[in-house]
Image 1: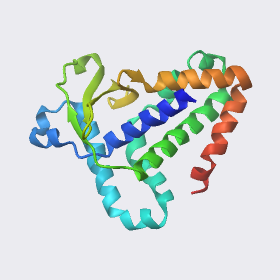
Image 2: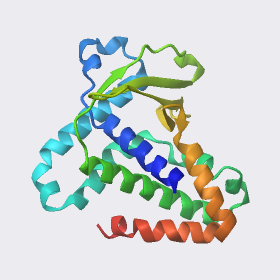
Image 3: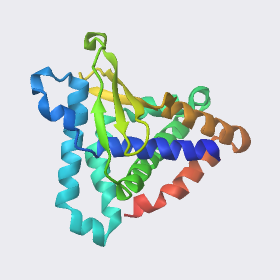
Length: 214
């Protein structure tokens, strides 16, 4: 139960990050921003514009948020890689059908969680930390902190890599040093051990049903 709450909190903060105006970046020339940070900036600007353009529709039908999250945010993540990391050793044990079903339901889980957090969005501020990684190594961490009014800042980092198509993709995120995929791996492992892979996937499918019907 505690781990499930932690995962929800992690996703909510992540979604808030992707939904904010990143003030420090407005004073930096585009040529000076590393490509991974530029990806986050672009997603932010597009998401904010989409929220403004669709404000009336979202108020009348909150389910419309699913399409916005799917189109704007999800392309920035490597869902196959995240699915493998989230299942850990259970990925190797799963057959092809189970892998396909799990990856799809995991994708919908991310959409559902992001969408819920988006609809509950409240103003926060974000600050990028100096970027020190070497992009030529094709694997970096983009560090930042979330500034809370009346509270301590929250350190956060995206783990990203350059794929074969020369596109930067997110495969994990850490909040206060806690890995999103590691938390999922622990939760999923327990459920698989107790009920089996198929029942885990079925339970995700039940919770994701409203997205499929939207």
